[in-house]
Every structure is written in C-alpha cells, then in structure tokens.
Length: 265
Image 1: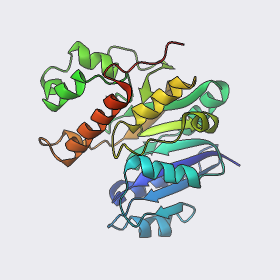
Image 2: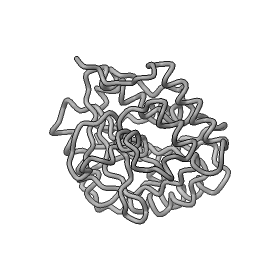
Image 3: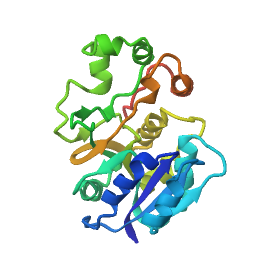
C-alpha cells in the first residue's frame, strides 16, 4: 500500500516532464507513492523519455486524444495501491515537504474530500489556485480582457480570493485541477470526473459535488509547488482553447444554474 497514487496526464509535455519527474523521484520524500502517467497520444519523445529515465512509472497510452476529465478517470481506475489520489499536472514541480504536508492534512482531517496546495508561478509570485465558484460575469469580463486593465475589480477579487491572506489554511469553494489530493472514500460518493467537460471547469464540478455530498474542500498553504502555467487560453482572441473554455462554462452553468453555491446544509 502506497500513501499516494500520483496521476499525471500529459500530451507532448517532454519540455517539462524530465525536470519535474526528476524532482518527484529524487527519493527525498518520506512517503511511498506510485506514479501513473496517462499519455494523451503524444507525438514528441515523452514516452521514450519516461521509459528510459523513469522506468518505475506506470505508463498508460491512449491511441487517440481524449479530454482531460476522461484521462483523469482512466488514471483513477488504474490506480489501486494509494491511500489517496493525487492529480498532478506535468508542469507542476513538487517542492520538498509538499506531498507530506498534503497527506498529513488529509490524515488529520477526515471530513476533507479534496485539498490543494499553494501554487507559485515560476517567478515565485502567488498563483490563485483556490477560488470561489464562477459566475457568468467573470469569464465574460476576462475574455474581454477587463482583468488585464482592471485587475482590482471586486468581481475578480472575489472569484480569485485575492483579497484574502493565502498564507492561512481554509475551506474554499474549489481548488484548481493543477494539483489536488483526493480521498478515495469521498470520490466513491461524489463520483468520477464528468467527462462531458473536455477541458476546463471539471475541477469546479468535482469540488462542488464534494460539497453536495458532505465532503469539504480545503486549501493547504504549507504544501507549496511551482506551476509553470502557460495560460494558452489567454493568448490571442477566440483561439481553440478559449472556445473550449466557453463550451465548458456553458455546460457548467446549464448543469448548476447561473448562481453556483455550496449547499447550506
């Protein structure tokens, strides 16, 4: 039995995987874990890299590309040995002690279904990885680039929780899917990721279903990782990623309504 089953989904992520997997496998962690890499039909040298340098990794190869939620579910179904599941983006670098901090937090807080770490940008500035549930005004404003010119608008401060001290742990609406640790018992009750989301918003959906099923979601700042977030959906205007993001938001609001809130019971 491992402490963690770490699930990484990647497509042509050779550019960041070698360095981040070296850090993950550096043997300085005080935990036992397995790593499952779900390769989403990569065309670069990702697979040979992992096979040659990290042979302990369990590689699951897709013959065609699937959405992120479906890939995560493939990894979850293949993960059988970890006490907890850890979803980890290939562009996230695990810092010393962060995995231990997440596992310790879950061990001490049995009512928590999902927890996420503090994520930092590559320049060590804070990345807003814990957030309040979306409302339609915010994504529309972001697509129109209002957040670039008016970043301190209350609608942005509210959703990204930028007016709150991120150095303290607290329960939050949701943590981003770049890194989240999941309790298996909670997942069994809330259900797997909704594969109707091809990309984006699946993290909100899963965390909301945790709250609906009486499991908490927490932000754990003493677990710190570096996320080399490319933000492809913010480049240009109405690119493919942005269209996919819009489709996911429409599905999210159709599923739960325009005012997404935690249940009050």
